[in-house]
Image (tube, rainbow, N blue to C red; front, side):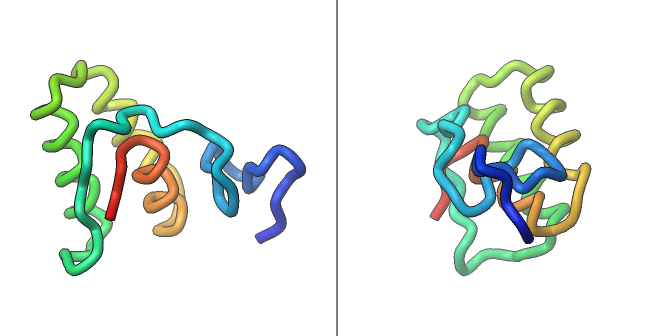
Length: 86
């Protein structure tokens, strides 16, 4: 995937290949490695973690909309833009 000079992939607002955007909720941690890699499960786990952290429902809905607006790589990049992962 060719990146623009800005560090964005050009198809979305993800920061593929670079640490361009600050994590929106850096205090929210979601373990990805060693867990179910199904995209819907990942979106659900992140949404639950955001709720537990007190995020507004509008923010959670925005995350869900963004995460599901592209392919699997976009979903993972979106998760990493929104929360801390491991």
